[in-house]
Length: 101
Image (cartoon, rainbow, N blue to C red; front, side, top):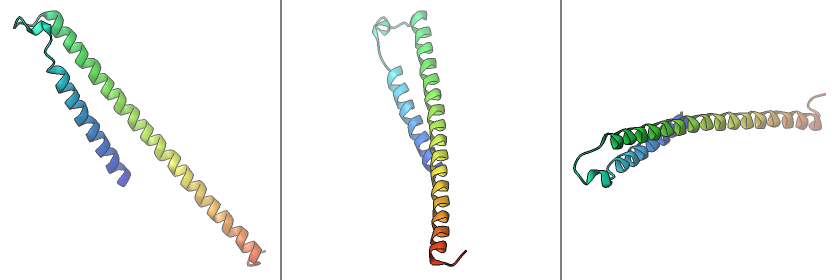
């Protein structure tokens, strides 16, 4: 439960940072705005840039999600291996003490 909350917090942080980046990037005043009119080429390139930025953000989010799931799986495997070692050590201790044949 705690890992899910931290993942949600990380996702919310990434989304907010991305939205700040996009808003700062879209407010960029370039030389095309000097005349007061926006050309078709500029608006189409601006739209394609926004689309690429959105696709990159989605790809980064998906990558982070799968890396988080992979990390969880590795951690779970390590904990299971540690549990198995703990029970193996208990069996060896019982044999040494003569509690079990």
